[in-house]
Image (cartoon, rainbow, N blue to C red; front, side):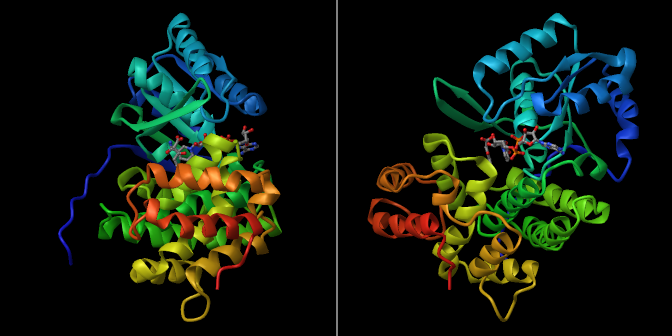
Length: 358
Ligand SMILES: NC(=O)C1=CN([C@@H]2O[C@H](COP(=O)(O)OP(=O)(O)OC[C@H]3O[C@@H](n4cnc5c(N)ncnc54)[C@H](O)[C@@H]3O)[C@@H](O)[C@H]2O)C=CC1
Ligand SMILES: O=C(O)/C=C\C(=O)CC(=O)O
């Protein structure tokens, strides 16, 4: 076994159907007295339900979280937390709401309790993102890692099937890239393979019956594992492409991950055969279908988009996307620099057309 460094990150996870019932206890364990409850406008009712449950321990509800954390929203939420005398924030929702919690924690040091209702995995990472003047800035800071995470599968039952599948693919992407990260380690590889296995089992079951609580539990368990991998090791080409396509061309986050993942995995496959074996074992396609094709099939067979064209990309933007992706690349096992321009352009063309990898 190669040498490695493993940094455990301190967060407390409470998992299980009905675990929202432990919310008050968990707030007390944070030594907090008044929580500001955060959500998107679409999940305001869920946030209000959480606030009602907390009674006098709720400072208020701030239902204005938005994708990619606009700086104006972050400032307004910070002011509101201060005005209401909140000493912790409860973020109920997906990566956008957790991201807003992180923006508050960055400045104020307020502890965040996250209640994830998608599979994006942000609750397990110290990665933050804030958008100012149309530019998204991301970074890592341990202050933003939620102190407590409550995973209650009942709260994710309302996540529409389409978003459940693409969000699950977003989680799988964290695990897949964690398997070949420069700073990867055997513990994260175990989690990554198991995370892919749980989601590959859960997504078809959710497609069949969106209120299948066992499948919703499996999916959240997978999201937890995959998010932990993202939080502990570096991202590579796939995430760079998604951040380019999402940040500079406005494509929707989970969908873009779903479309790009099979193509990015195909690009890297020859450089990292062990990672491919683990992905195939997780998907249950070992010995038959390649990791890249298995990921493509998982998305397509569950009704998710597989082409950039179908999620709003313009063919005329592919050249510019290639330039951005190769100009400041993340570390990747197969080198990505200006000499790889033609191969990256072809990758994006395949993603644009939705070509099934061999
Ligand atoms: N910092 C990190 O480690 C990570 C950050 N992200 C960030 O998170 C954002 C994307 O997060 P997502 O979770 O994909 O989407 P999201 O948080 O934007 O949610 C998408 C929509 O689904 C709704 N929704 C969520 N859960 C629901 C439920 N159970 N029932 C009904 N509706 C529900 C939301 O209210 C929203 O309208 C991006 O900005 C991305 O950059 C994503 C992954 C990791
Ligand atoms: O692309 C992802 O799913 C992972 C990380 C981010 O989205 C980073 C962020 O913008 O918060």
